[in-house]
Length: 180
Image (cartoon, rainbow, N blue to C red; front, side):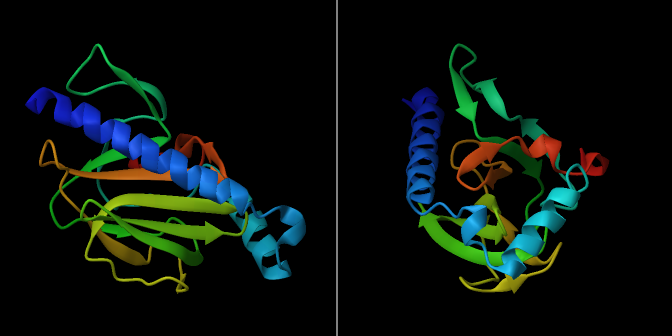
């Protein structure tokens, strides 16, 4: 049973991600409905492609975007809609760019924070000690919480996703290479 816990958790996180994506799709913000300020933030975000701040100051990417083998069950693969970053206990998670906190939800005792950057959304999963609230306007590298330990491995892992409107995009194309 212990070997299947990571698989069950991965399926649950995929379900949550897909459910959140469907919800985001139903409330999709098209560039035609953005305010002038949101349009400016969207443009500034696009201009930073490949140069955005990392969500943690130090960490190692342990799972990449796209189809990946499961870390503990190599015969199983899964679709990763973001990247997973291994960090140390107490690591601060920070906003990758200025934006507005739109969602904070709790899943199995861990938090997910979503920040809108005009027509983009950054998603930070597996957080604790959240220090922002819904509606807060945040700046680049502003702390939003701390990375929590993973249920199955007890490692401190941040799952990070980036969406354009409601479509997943590869964070590797957007984040600075400096911290990789």
